[in-house]
Each structure stands twice: as structure tokens, then as C-alpha cells.
Image (tube, rainbow, N blue to C red):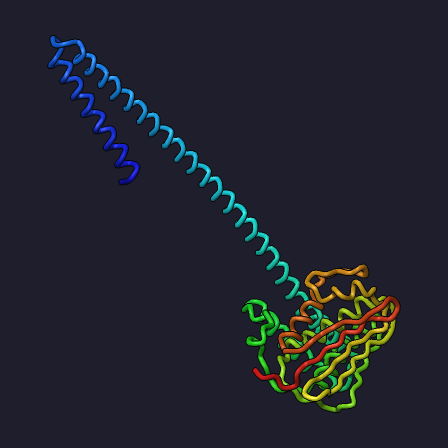
Length: 315
């Protein structure tokens, strides 16, 4: 029997007992003294039982109310914590979104601006060269469209199952990226050279992401070299993989900092702006292709980023 039903049964029994005692007392009020005393004692006992039951019920109700208040307080605390965590997560995701979009668009915008300024300056007299520059502007515009589309469609997770694979020439892709960055590099007294024993290197990969990797690496080198110099991109074929090394001869980093440069939002002692997101995106993109990436550096000896990529991954 449930607690509530038990209490009601006891109260009912007590009421019946009290009525019986009153009836006995009325019946024997002119009778012997023990009978009257018995009736009186029964009545007092019933009254005491009722008082005890009432007190028990009151304490039980108070305990339940206290437990209910504590439960509500715990739920409020839990909800407040969940809300705080959700707000922090949303803030982090928004920062990542802004950083990703910034890294995707900053360099293409600079490239488009550079070619547009050359065309509008009147320096370019050769019609074929002018057409070539217009094609480069169109290519970078398409790249920006792809970047924005991926950011807003959440396809920028760089998961291998979400990459858009196509056939490409890795050598041509790298040379084009180096040419696009040439003007920005020259402004800083930096030369970009591409070295490879191969004239062409066919592979299947996500063209957009590899372009993004190259732009991020070259932009990072130009930002942190700290002095005029050379950025060298070496490309080798190693069996079924391609090996790339982007090496600059800038100021370099201590080994303890180099170990962390692929972490999100990491900013070393040579920090000069940005969110520390570019090399993190490089790592995610290369690993999304099934490749590997590592860094080597020392003070005064520049920074080298080594990558391997499968030429024809099974997707």
C-alpha cells in the first residue's frame, strides 16, 4: 500500500476508535468507574495518535517541499551551465568561421586588386597579357565564390568524405600560386622559386583546398620571415605520393614553438597579427587528403613546412 493510502487508513481507524470510545463512555457513564476511565483513555490515545500522524504528515510534506526546491535549484544551475557552455561554443565557432573566411578571401582579394591596378594603370600594352590578367582575375573570383560557398554550407570541415576530388597537375597548381603571390612577395623583397625534377605531376585532389594550402603557406612565410629573402617550394614524386617542402630563409622559430604552430589559434613569439588559424587549416586540409604535415625551424634558419600527399587516394 502506498504511503498516502496508509496514512488515510490509520486516520480512519483512529476516528473509528475515538467514536467507539465516546460511545462507550456515554453508555457506561453511570456504570463502574473503570469503564469510564477506559473510554476516556481510549479517547486520549486516539487524539494522541491523530496528533502524531498530523505531525508526521507535516514533516513529510516539508521534506518533499525541500527536496523539490533543491531539485529546482539543481536544474537551474545545470541549465545555466549548459547555456554558458553553449554561448562559449557558439562564440568559438563564430571566431573559427570569421578566421576561416578571412584566410580564404584575404589573399585572392589582394591578387585581384594587384592585377586590376596593373590593368587600370595603362602599363600593360600587350593585349594578350591583358587578357591573361583578366583570366587570372576571373579565376580568383571563382575561388572566392567557392570559398564563401563552402564556409556557409559547412563543407569546410575538410573531412575526406566531403572533399571535391578532380584531376589536376600539382606542378602547374604550385607554379600558378607562386605567380599569383609574386607581386606581394616583391613588395617585401622576397623571391618565390619552384623547384622540381618533374615538368608535370598528375594527381587527384580537392583543387580549392590545395590552393588554399598554398596561399596560407606563402602568406605565412611572407608575414613571418622578418627580412628579405627567398621562399623555395620543392616538389618530388615518391612512389604513389607527392612530397612538398615550403622553405623560407627568414628569422625562424625556437623548436619549442615550432611544435605548436599547427594548433588552432596558436600565436608564437613572432606574432604580428591574425588569429593563428592559417597553419591549422593547412594541417586539416592535408590530413583530410590522407597526407601528413610537419614543420622544422630554428632561430635564424627560417621555417620549413614538409607535406606528403597521396597522388591517387582511394575515395
